[in-house]
Length: 280
Length: 175
Ligand code: SF4
Image 1 (cartoon, rainbow over the protein chains, first blue to last red):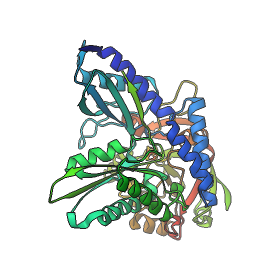
Image 2: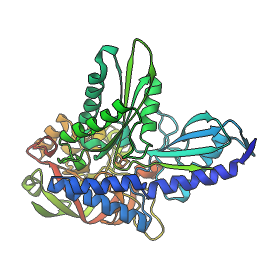
Image 3: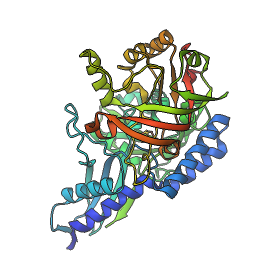
Image 4: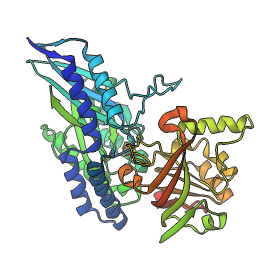
């Protein structure tokens, strides 16, 4: 049994919150660079150039990439042979978020109650998804999520007869409805199968997969490529002002489902698709 | 077309702007987003004075990240404008001449813009670090308790924006 102290977890979480909001991961930077090269609209190219400049300024001058530094979403993979000591895991993660957002000059965007809406002033609580895995590792993934794009995300409870064409229509519908609101070029996380909540969770998790990587399932990989091409044909473009680059990637996860259903979730993310993964 | 615009500006200037124009704004603008709009709306309903005079002024839909020591502001890009659609027509009727945000607007907002000769600008969403460089001063003037959602008076210099919807109702997003 490996023991991990909560203080180590808090320290790691704090640093992850800061890192995620000041620097995009290499896969996202590469994708944006390539997007600028392939964009056909002049204005679109200009906007992508500004986004590149924005990343440089964020990094050099310690200004968050986007003012919406998000709600802190975590995927925690905890080995079944791990013993958390000196406190509880959930509190440790929230304390890390509190320290990261306060000391890192990040925006506090969380309200304590969805109707009463009073700001918690430290960006807690985080949204935390746990999974227990074999071994004695503890892996944290943070994906701070902005709500301009979150608000444009959708769940469709399709019928089995709708099939893959139904899935394609659902994805295109979500993208077209999102348009300029989701700060394109977007990244799409898609979950197909499972149940109502399982597909939404997969869609969120899919956003943390590096862009440029594909599903290992041949038809899913094909679907990812086909949908990326179709989305880019919409002409929404960078900033929604027209162009050939509307999305940078479509990441799809699938899961077994019920004989009566075909749930599909589309979690839309903007070009500030932040994800940091770290072992504790 | 590239245009330079001082804010606040007149209705004549607003009428001369066309969807697709790139502008650089210099002068004073005010920030307000969801919670501040709700409070302003309540103030109007109660017959109270608003924190600033709307006439000829521009609202930037934005809630910044905190400023580091010695800097006027943190990251400062636009938020989605459609969430303010419920409140915007009333503010336009009271003299508001421009709005800066990102994303689509409702037909009711477009009608109010035509009626009053107002414009809607888009700033680049997700470019908060870059846009913060065009903000030279920032001061909270109302609703301090709302944190990032407080109303701020900003001094901007060459703040880059694009006219998305002009005073004739022409909408760049729909081209
Ligand atoms: S959608 Fe993304 S890029 Fe746009 S404002 Fe929100 S977090 Fe920033």
